[in-house]
Image 1 (cartoon, chains in turn blue, yellow):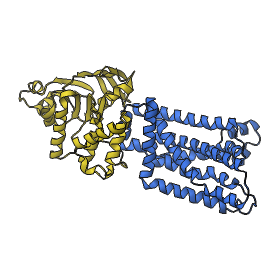
Image 2 (cartoon, each protein chain N blue to C red):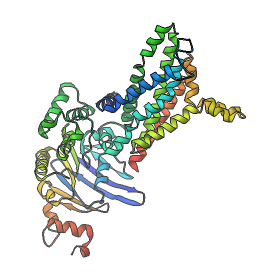
Image 3 (cartoon, rainbow over the protein chains, first blue to last red):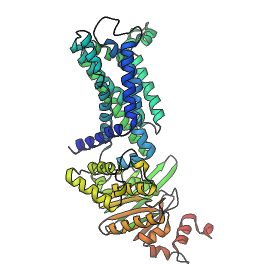
Length: 247
Length: 242
């Protein structure tokens, strides 16, 4: 109970701090402009020319656009606390390290989900253009929210490893990039000789699990995958911070 | 109220704190003295539960810092070195956050924040964001955060560092006012401060306690009867100090 209240307090402060600085609005606008432009205008993937009213091109771009948005919004979570010394204040307050980590994680996740929710005009657009399968779209949004959770968890972890926001940004972008690309034909074709390598590499990839959700299949296996990535990264964050302060 | 039991801590091959034990009772203001790098900050970080000691422990009002950290931390108000605070928050919101995390809600929270701002003279800047504050206001904001819940134990790392003489005077006055019902530790390397506010002083050097007594007792250790000379002779050895 006490712990939940602490998590809520940390969560509120962290979420507010996004909107206290202009950066949050910049991220949001860039995210919305990018995803909008890519969905509707990218050559070879255009929503208009396919003649089908769905959001396939929107969801296909989500993992790529997240690569910029998520590391940028998570890079400060711990790096800034460590650089300015507020971590000393935070961790000597009557809370546990776990409360602080979970509160921050949830705040950053909700921030991204707010960005995702603001893409609602694309739903209106496809409904105006035709008669899309709303079940598939709903499923896609659930998948995109879960995927955001994984990116945020990676960003939370890299932010804990350094005092520098720039290093955190580059690290989490790289890790997420590898995790996304691992499931694409780009990488899997490299291992075409060994089927089991493909299986291992692609089951670990964000891409593989996001693909099936996009098709409207909300598989328990995919949900468990996302939740385990988040749990693993949060746990790794705990270990990193616990070790850093004792170093 | 606060007890340090045989604390050890090393960073790599450097022994930062090498077996420190002491206790502070209610009503005492303990001055923690030592040259830079003597282990003052490390000791304070272990007392407040920020750093885990390599061995030994601290107890605060009967709560052990290692086995019951949340309860122990709830008894402590802490002002870390350089007064860190969330730069993008306003003074008022920052204090509200610290009050909330210490379990206050609603009207009680409001009263605590108001009192702390009144006491630390932060009224003029309550709606300013912290990064726009001068050093003195920043220090007082962090100080307000530490005393807000009226904790039985107060630990302050160089509370007057970087302040102008008037501000130093104010901070010392506040410490003295609060000392009757609290156990207070302040670290400093300003010796006049010890004489001004402390009821007892501990001098540490290279991670060990080299002296422990009232300022008057310490002064008697030197032929000249001056605290400076005692400090010098204990921390750099008798030969060099002459």
